[in-house]
Length: 187
Image (cartoon, rainbow, N blue to C red; front, side, top):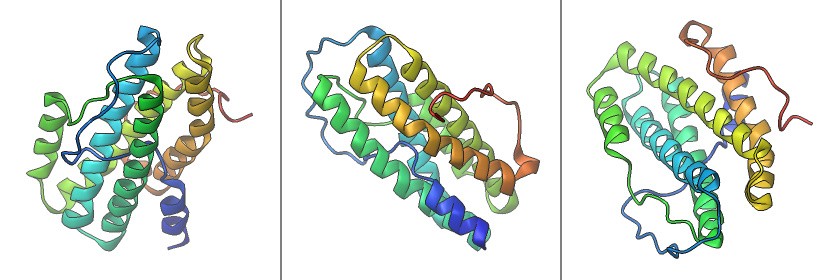
């Protein structure tokens, strides 16, 4: 159970609210397209992680999956809140709800029960963390806004720890590796 406590503590990756809250972000900004895309793509990943975490907290077959789902949902809710604040300060409009693609992904996993649900949830959690790391690395190494680069660099070690904990606990779920081995954000 110590691994679960470590994973729960480590699972603070990007999140916030997508539950019908109005998006009051100003429509004008001075950011480049790369920074805007980073913020918008990260919001979609966080919304997906939060929604899947909420599902796992209820539908997970065993206590560990339910606890992991709850932690994932809470952590991504918090990170999405931070992301929304960052975006609002930059004048970037973030999506108020999941994209149609994200909604389809959630619907597909929602239909599963028992072991198939748990396996899909873990696979999605790993994929989401890998994609999040790639986004953070691109932003951290980019030539865009310094505040966004600093925020991405600060978040990167935590998301890497989450992925490492998932890989350690669920090695059988490791699929195609999307994350190259770099030390960005680990300095």
